[in-house]
Structure formats: structure tokens, C-alpha cells
Image (tube, rainbow, N blue to C red; front, side, top):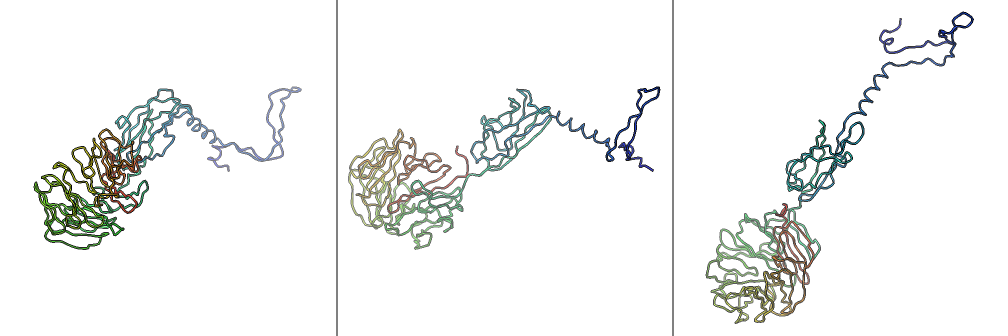
Length: 440
């Protein structure tokens, strides 16, 4: 007995040598029959017709898709060329079809908006540039004609930590240094809560202030630290060398074991020894020994070597600022000793503040209208026209403008929140702290 379900879905032609079908035409007064030669048994499934209908319907359906995702961009960077395609009946949607696009949280279009409606051309809408200050990824969403599509946008975060650059090349990286730290030079960094780092390593906590210096002959990186609780410490390459108990907490370290008292009337100490009073400004560093240059409130200046007065300069003026290595800034005028060097100076920094005035005396300046210059003694030795107005001279031919660090005319790093230099024998180095945030 035949299966009812089978007979409902197919017509089966029995096998045999041949079979006939009626022919309504008449031949010789009788109906004719046609004979067909039969091959193998075959079946015509009725359900095949049912499958053909959805395939036809799919060809008529609308579709919406992001055509060139997934997407990626650098934090603070731009993502351009994102496209969304809309089709109907397999053909591009009519020109001007509105596609609504919504960005993930933290992302904006170039006009600051977070969503928008964009018309198609040839079925495709090209979106304006997309930016983000965030490091968090998200999904971009498009809607059209009741359809929704989305695509992921990944974000590469800005780097954080600290770096050391030698001229135009990256010399070292210290990812453990917090982005809130201040670069001191010599691979030392100080955080607002008083944590002192040497490279990636925490040297101490409880620091109120610190100043670095580099000994001639690559004798190591030195730092003088004033403790928040009073007293001071000296480290070489991150290792404690000595401690002083009598400097107190109300002093500012200058480096090279010199300390300047706070207040309107200042005194200069070498370790715990008073060496000068009535000081208006002072700077210190290591040269052929520990050297400090002082400008007195009453006018004139003096140079001290290892705490002992080495020389005096009479005519720098009471309003001058000591830069070191024989240089002084009086208003916007630069002097080398008593010799006028340049005017219109907005920023100046000596390469080796502890050097004796002479062949090692080199200073970088930024002029009021832009352009930076380097002088050796009183002789111009370099001009850097790409350094913008308002930049800060760091020394060693490094300059900072906003979040950018220049070496001579070249921007070598962006995203910088703090920077400080320290000359070594025959090379200049800049320590930078990376903010991890977009520049204002």
C-alpha cells in the first residue's frame, strides 16, 4: 500500500519497458495512443516549487551594510572614508536616500555632532571624519528603511609613561612612570604625591621637591631631594648616597648639593653650609665640581665652586636672572658675563649650568616673534626657524611648544605633559612624560 504522505508530495511513474498515453487525435476512426520509451524511474518533488519562492523574494529585499569595516583609529586621531551602502531589489537605493548614523559614546563627527543623516549617491553614503578623545571602543550604527546595521570601531590608546630621547632618536622608555609626573632630567621623575622615580623604579616617597645634576665624566645621574618632613637626601643613579637633617623643608634644591631658602630674602646653602645671603636668583649644576651662579638682590653676581666663591661679575644688574655657565637674562636681553648677546628673548636655557664660563658655555634661546637660536659664548652657532613663538627652550637644542618637543627644527614627539633636559658628555638628552590625553 502506498504511503499517503509520499503520494501527497510526489508523482511516481512506474518502471517498465514502455508505457503509453492517450492521444485524442483520430486515425482510421479510432483514438490513437503514443508509446514512450522509459528510462530509469524518476520523481518530481512538489516541494521544489515551494523553495523557489523565498529565493525570488530575497532578490527583492532591501539591504543595508557598512561596506569597509571593521574600523580602527588612534585615540585623538581621525577615521575617514567610512561608507554605508543601501540596496533595494539588488540595485542601489535611489540617490538621496537618507541613512541615519549614530556614533558610539565618546566619538564625534568633525563638526562635533554624535549622529547625523547622510544621503546616498549610487546607493552609498560616505561619512565625514570621525574622532574620539576616548580610548574605549564602540559600535557605529546605521538605520534606513527599517533596517539596522552596525560595525565595531577599535581604538589604539595614546601611549603613557615616560621616554628619553637622544637628539632625534628614542633612547629609552619607562612605562611605569605616571602621566601626572614631572620630568626632572637624568631619568628622574617626581609625582604630585611626592613619589620619586628613577626610570621605572620608585626611589622614595614623601618628597617635597627635587633637582638633578650630571657629574662630568659620566659619573652618574644625581638628584637632591627635599623631604616633606624636613631634611634632604642625595641619590646617585637611584641609590641613596647621603642624607642631611638641617636643611629643613622650606628650601628649594638647585642640584649639585646647593639649596636656596624660600621667602623674599633668600640664602644659598652648599649642603648644610651657608655660602651666600640676600640672593635674588641662583642656578647650579655639576661642571668641574659643584658650581652655582648667584645674582644678588643688591646687584652683581658671584660664582661658587664647591661652596667657595670663585669669581664675581659686577654689572649684571639687580633684575637679572642667573642661567649658569656665565649667562644672565636681564628682562628680554641675554648677556654672557658682562657682554650683551641678544635682545627680544622670551625663553633661555643653558646646556650645562654648572660649566665654567668659557668654551663649554652654550645657551638656547627663543625669540619673541618665533625662531630659536643657539649661542656658544657670545657667538651665534645655530638658528632653528621652525620653532614657534611662545616655545620654551629646554637646553641641548630641544624646545617645547604645547605638547610638542622639537629637536632643532624637527618635531620628535607629541602628547608631552612635561620635559627636562640634561647634557651628557658629547650628547643631549630630553626626558619627557606622556600625558595619555588629547592636546587641548
